[in-house]
Image (cartoon, rainbow, N blue to C red; front, side, top):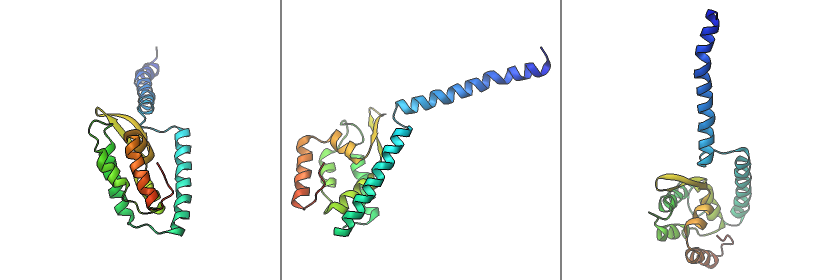
Length: 160
C-alpha cells in the first residue's frame, strides 16, 4: 500500500462516522418533531398565508385592541400554561388568556403571536403545533365551550 493510500484510508472512517452521525441526528430530530420536512414547511406557509389574509379582512372591520407586544406576552403566558402536557398545566389561566380577545382581529393577532411551539411531556418534546394544537389538545370540551361562548357574546366569529 502506498503512502497516499494509507493517508486516504485514515480519513475515510472518520468522514463516514461524521456523515452517519449527521444522518442519524437529522432522523432523530424528525422523529422527535423538532425539525420540519418539506410537507410541514408547506403546511406552515399555507397556514401563515391564510392567517394573514384573515387578519387583513378582520382589520377592515375592527382594529386590534392591543399592541403586537401585548399579544406576544399573552401568547407566552398561554404557552407557559399549556406546554407541559397536563402535568403542570394551568388550564384555568389559559382559558382566561384566550378570553382576553375582543374581536376577530385580536384572535388572529394572538394566533400569529403564538406561532408554532413545542409541547413537553416529562421534559421530553412530544409534539409541535400552533395555538389550536395546544387549545384543543389540552383544554377540556367544557373549557373550550366556555371560551367559544365568550367569543359568541362578543360577536367573534372564530371558534375553537
